Image 1 (cartoon, rainbow, N blue to C red):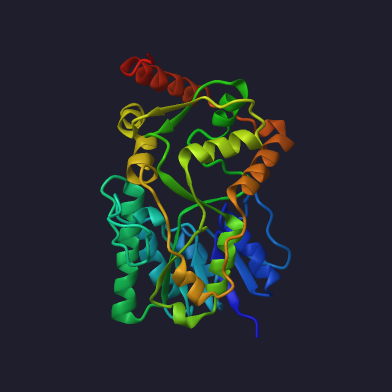
Image 2 (spheres, rainbow, N blue to C red):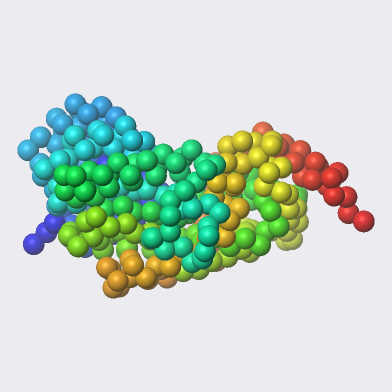
Length: 333
């Protein structure tokens, strides 16, 4: 028997792969969005036009519907959660909240990270908001039986997303032989997960009532240093050589708070994940796309259409400024 699933969003970087796989697995998929998505909607999915930030439009769009599972890909604050609680009480057997692995304790007290690792991020407001959302949903589960399932993606990418802050500007610097900035000493470990791999875990949980009340991260088992990540993308981009310059994360934060918060609140720490739990609930889950394969896919996407070669002159200049400051503080002998 088909299960009926609602994705709020469903055409984003992570969710687009989940939508495609859901259709492959013969799920009766509904997508709630505003109807102006840049990515194609999978054939066979039903689109409901509504704006989740306008609850009345959602009530109209969902009138008469109930679902086996609802996945909200775009909830970021407790206010968003309160809206969903009001909309979906008694309307679904599972409510999936897409949280973030950045909510895990920073710095981590131990590795690998498991789902029982404490949630605590003193730096990044994005992560603290996700923690508040989780806490509200767990309270709803305990007090009223609201059927929450918490999902914590780590750094998940598709062909459109470069993992380095600055996006294609960094690839352009690589190709021109200009120095590329890497936070810290480049040796902290980081986990990047292809969105098609992530989808196998998420879709595998849809309809599994045993997952209610549980939290899962869904990541690759491949951990690479930030230096290795840059070398993999340089090779995929055909850069003849790579000149990496390392700078303290605090120095980068002093020049750009947003960039710094994402580093000091997440990327400066090694992240290695134990995926035992998702593999126990979804026995066929296995991340099979290594970064060197995914990086070629990303670079091919950018190179297929030169209009995607968007260079940010402000970021390019900022990179030069920070590198200059670092080299003045620690001149080569």
